Image (cartoon, rainbow, N blue to C red; front, top):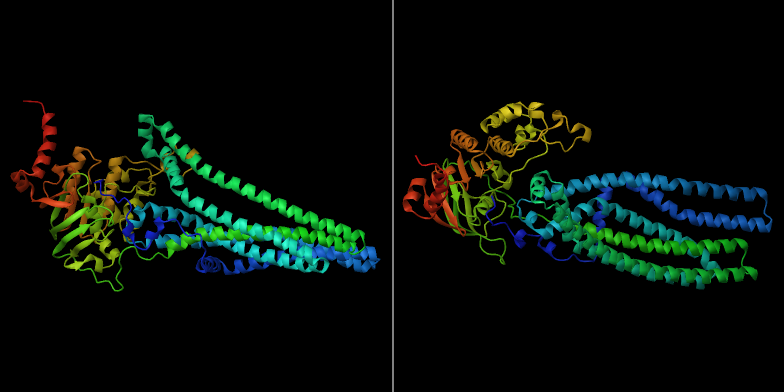
Length: 629
């Protein structure tokens, strides 16, 4: 039921309200520590092996260069063959290790990525599942942060580890060659090292721009995904084809893609210019150093081995500095992404949670709303205004009102998806804010108008209403029978074990009905009702337009079934079809978040107020279609 009271952007969602602002470009030690901790907890042995092998490769170029220098100097100085053979064998060993190391590193990296991805996903969705309310899920800024957290949680820790190890490896290589170069020319060493400083600074600036760009295009990419999902949606396919709006939606999707691509292209072009300038600087330094080395070798100041060492050292130091800058920037960018992940996983509760919640008593007296006011933030209008309402145990209360009256919001408060801004909701005299939200919800069964259709088996679709009943076929079939859907499910190719989707099957299998079936809207609605019925501990049943997708006969059957199986349960019924609520003990009419009328059907008709006007308006449509006798 869309009553127009959905939240625009509820900043009152708690500790994640900062998500609406652009994230800081600063990296805290906490984030770096979080990345390393995540990788270590996921696979300590693999991480240790990966670090050892990666760092060892940093020493191989230096060892190879020194061995090559020794070989050349030995050849020109007339060294013994045995000595030259030993040096040659050393070069062969370092070459073999250099050839094998990348494959081993790739394997260890893959193992680490899989382990970290699994742990990161578990932690992220454990944290998301721990959000008690709905405010964060209805906040676009938080959804952007959550999307970046999904990307950052799986990839960023490995990128941080890779970047950190790459930095250390580059430092090892640079240090080894710098010491070698220093003996030949301290001036060249200073020039080569100085040329690396601009590279490092430019890479860090580009990393910050890249992170800022990804944040800014987040809404654009989310819209693009929305249009893409819409164009491939089974639910939307009929209207898209009937109204001929496929090309229109595709145009919007491509426009958003072009906008995102333009932002990325702009950054790429800046990077090309910066990299070209840095490359020119490196070439000038390397060329000058090489000119000095050739001149010195020609004058006999350095040996042939020294010359090869110099050439290798300049190239290695410049390459190491570039790698150092690139890995530092990559690590910085990964840490910025990981910050979103840590913000989500450490956000804490979104609703007030008592350290010692009170036990929730059995519902013996009823539910009471005392002066309940609600709005999503101080900047938004009031949705509910001073509601006072009592629902005795075992009674049936119906909520009636036009769209935007506040009916959906009231349901959200009863389920404690939000807390009242003012006032209290009492369950047998106990404020529901003082009890565990999970325990409260275990006492509530609900059929929402926007009910879920899970791509799972028929049995699982019902059993998800109470996980204790997931494998209890008797309870599942009893709930299905109450909802009038047992015969339909029993007649499926695999009965209750039939998948209610064809999403997970190969294309060649989709024509086989045994692989999965697709139910009609009315059948899905009955299944949602069965899912609510399977909760045997329910003391409050919320029915939000429970028969909106059913024909008249099925609607009558469902309401008869609900009345028959009421069994002393308290019921809250929301419906725009006033004929469906006429048997309620109390009917409450909401308008602009206030109660304007209350009473039973006959009393409200006699009062000739808002309810009577709406009832006669609906009845006149049917009477107008009735032929005169």
